[in-house]
Length: 463
Image (tube, rainbow, N blue to C red):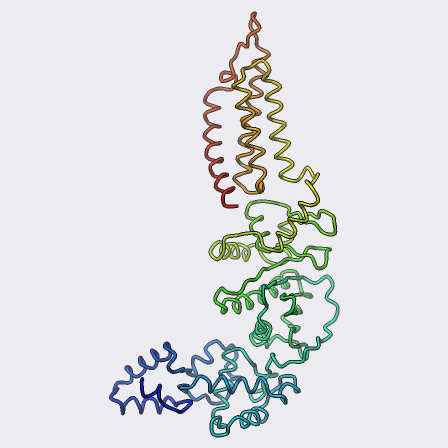
């Protein structure tokens, strides 16, 4: 180990490594392999085998004809070589198309001795491993470097009415789009790619993926084929991007957004819709150009994914994050607040408020012949209603709590009405409050209210 760390050579072949290990007294090949693995993990030596390089390749015949297994003793050797290619003026002018001749010219400008032609295949393999290039039009000896593509967007036609989806990043890494091109290069339409976008073909569908680094978003549009095919193609692209995102180790802050139908440029969080669907909420409201727009939750999700896929997404959400409103949603909610309370009777807060106040008022009205204690109890119920609906009443247990209280209030109010009809000669109620409804009925509803109230309180605290 100490000998290799002090070796001035930039790389060492696997054959030479085993020979050196044998000379140093490590006679068993298994021991030498274990030592090599440990040094690789420590960063003392970088070892890349042919199997590791192409284990993820879907098209191994695109690999160079021969890959020599090397132990890179100087990591700067490989990074300097790749950096030189990515900054080569000739390759930039060619739009990122590189052949062996152009590669050789570029590397020889660094050092013929340090970068001999026999190591070109290894360098190309490393570039493919790190998703920097892919075989151009299926040629073994021509490659495309997406980072060096021309910036001008290619005309891909009119995408109005296409199925859409957006990824919004806090900061969009430049490698996201280029790595997507590398992974899906077999699907790229001929000549339809530029530095920040590309058109892909799959079955009877076409997809346009376009990124905007300054605004930190990436859009996907899919057209053609059937609705199922479009969703499957979108799922393929989203899945590929998700795999790329995971390589950042969870440090990539992003949102997935679903477009609002008939409102170009307006989006709603995909995770929000997934959670609303799980809770059984049918509509999501947002403000667009001073007007309140209602979005059908299930229809919006059906446009971009299948039900089974959404179940998996929800599982991922529960494992990966605890949901909090995104910046995008906070902006929408602030705009809604500025508009004042909605007047729609389909809105949950409005329905809950009317139910609570109506039930309380009815109970108080029918209780005029009853005692003050009863009025206080019913009044407390109404106050609890109003308090609970002030904090996101669309959550499931809060709705249950509201309707449990409503039922209790209304049934007791009905009991007072019955008691008022049955008076004795002294004008006293012949049936008491408890007697009019029944103690067992009140006891059952008390249990329901306690359970749902506790669950509703936990939801309110976590919101």
